[in-house]
Amino acid sequence: MAAQQAYEVPDISLSLAATSTEVTVHPTEVIAAEQIRDAEKQRLVGVLPNFYTSYVPDAAPMTWKQKFSFATRGTFDPVAMLGVGFAAGVEQANNSFAGYGQGAEGYGKRFAAKFADGRSSDYLTHAIFPSLLHQDPRYYYQGTGTVKSRLLHAIGSAFLTRGDDGRTEPNYSYVLGDMCSGALSNLYYPAANRGAHLVFTNAAVGLAGRMGGNLLREFLPKHSTTNVPGDRTP
Image (cartoon, rainbow, N blue to C red; front, side, top):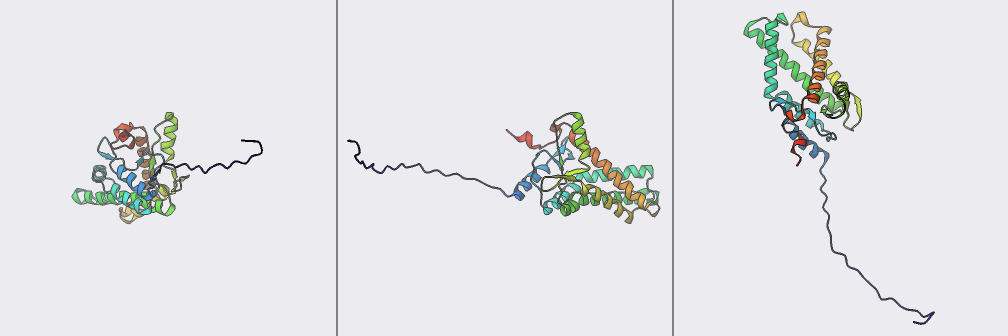
């Protein structure tokens, strides 16, 4: 081809093999429901409910309906009912709240009071206030780090929690829930035991129990809980 001569290049076309990519997106509510179903199978040493411990660090936030359903499942677990009966028996043996009396009637009143204490506390701290304040009622297992950091995490979780938006914030749900549960106890405890003292005593007991429960969740070996998500990962 001589210089300055024009040359027309023919059209060239390339064909690409057809490909298809399928992406499945699950709504947050569906993911949360799956995680809740797994958590409802978690039991310490295969017996004690450990439902409210999340071993998934980025667990999906629960809807208000899921919070109420989860609270109902936990608070009416048969093992929880055995705990109510045991606590009532201890009070009977110590003649706590003597106004209830002794015998079968006294035990029945103590059982009813402990039952009401536990159910009101569970619903207020795990469902009602978390729904109103958009807070997560679960304890998030740390599992790594120094003993000190894990200790601070366990105790601090009684005062700090995760919001539904993932941010850390004061645990108003637990504080307000325990206080309101203590206030409700004035409706059915013996007259001689009612008053502000009963409210703060029950609230303090609830808070102490929560910190103790968090310490058990954090420091008992992870493998002592059945159905932990990590244990099912191939």
